[in-house]
Amino acid sequence: MQTVVERELEMQLVLSPERSIPVPAKLVYRADDPFAVHVTFHVGSDAPVNWTFARELIVEGVFRPCGHGDVRIWPTKVGGRSVLCMALSSPDGEALLEAPCSPVAAWLERTLRVVPPGSEHEQLGMDDGLSRLLAPAAGDELWLGKPAPGQDTPDASA
Image (tube, rainbow, N blue to C red; front, side, top):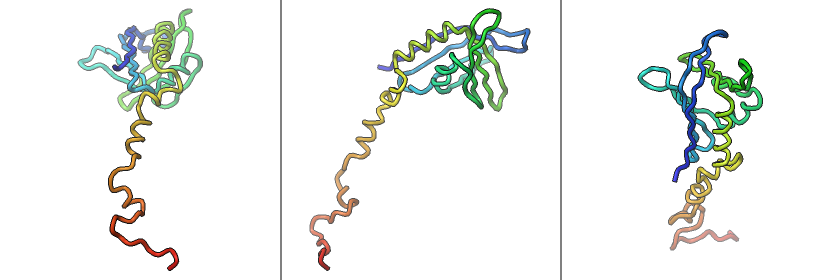
């Protein structure tokens, strides 16, 4: 069974210091993709805008500025309320969004209960996959330098 933690909320797209517009958004975390968070913005176009980035960015970003490049996140206060700022940059443009801290923090806390930090790799089944990949198979002895049945081995004293 796949565990999914979702939260719909309204963010503010900052157009200028004096003006912003509401943007419906959905935060999604899937246990089968444990290192990532997915954010979908409904900006009034035919298709929503999707962003995927490291969960670790939000975990750190609720406490202090973090990230560089395409995704930067930091906490601040706007009009006396705590918000989480997300600066997103792509070849198509840039956006600064503000999300209310409380619902983001509550959603993030739920993701951390589903997959605690440091245990993400356990969700990927990599150990099982590596075990199957590295398990000896029929014919492996030929590749490991062991002679095939019926072949002579060189004399070690020669």
